[in-house]
Image (tube, rainbow, N blue to C red; front, side, top):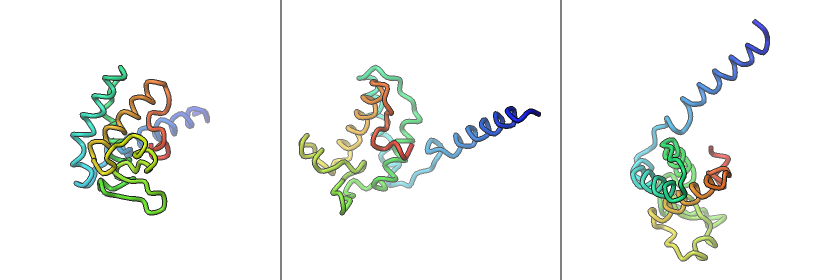
Length: 133
């Protein structure tokens, strides 16, 4: 077998393995899973608003990011930056918009809007969370 066929085989197997170990197939702790219905609803709504295709995998990625950012604790605060909430938005962002920082629905809603908006502009939809995805 030629070397490039082996390389192709390795690449294909790597992709298959990465799909089965990605956040889409992860099991989340109850502190994160309880937010799944709201994350799903908000992502669907904002994707429809921006005329973007909703992909269910985005829900799992959003929950994975939530797990990494706050562990599902809507009262989480980063002592060094002051970032707060489920998705650890910075204080200047919340003050500028007047949103309640510890309201999980607002946190999720803006994450979903941010995702769908970036996707509509053909940018990386996860923007600031690029390193998690």
